[in-house]
Length: 290
Figure 1 (cartoon, rainbow, N blue to C red):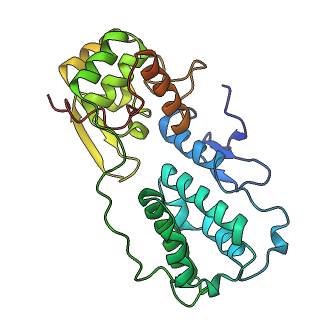
Figure 2 (figure 1 turned 90 degrees about the vertical axis):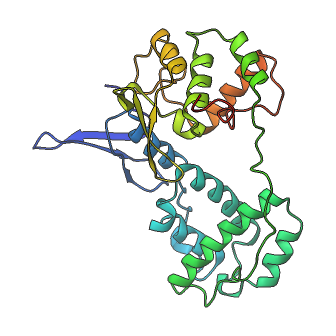
């Protein structure tokens, strides 16, 4: 069997298989489940995008923001987050590190936090504050800082989740362009008739369906759901060939990552002449449960 890049595989004396992500400059990580399975690929994707260990880490200045971020990236608190949340927080913290990594984390002032948030758009501000708050809570627990400077800072509620909700007319337009049996039509049906996020839909496979029920463990919440298979979804399932552990795979037969799936689905929307605000998000609400 061919394994993904940077995967080390062996079988021990008792016949048990072991897979580890091994890449120079990255943390060594054990990969659960069978190779290429949704569980395996979720862990692999997280490892590939994981925090690269700083070159010369032994020379990192103790007590600096950079040292704190490096420690947070390898902490249980960070590794317990969903892959999507890890990606978002990692990007924010890497930018923060590039700008202020040499400064002492213990002296990060509340005034700086408030001033930084003032110039941000609502969604960016919310994500940035959540990320810095999580970092500082880690630092307080590890006695790297005396207090959390984000404590007491509140942002006004955001009225929208930022995604356009598809209308029935938009769903019909997409369906008219992509016929039953095609991968784009299958992807839309999974999104529409399960009501799940793209990150959960791209990991679904026939092994998750039993007795007319799709069992889904949500990536973001960790909740396990039992979703009845809609009759229209069943018809599309029957008409769409699938020989892989996940329904939706790339041209090379591999599961989609978060970014590649979003880009691929956007291309299918463009092909159908869909408005720019249409994406893989929020195309389920009008018809789920119908």
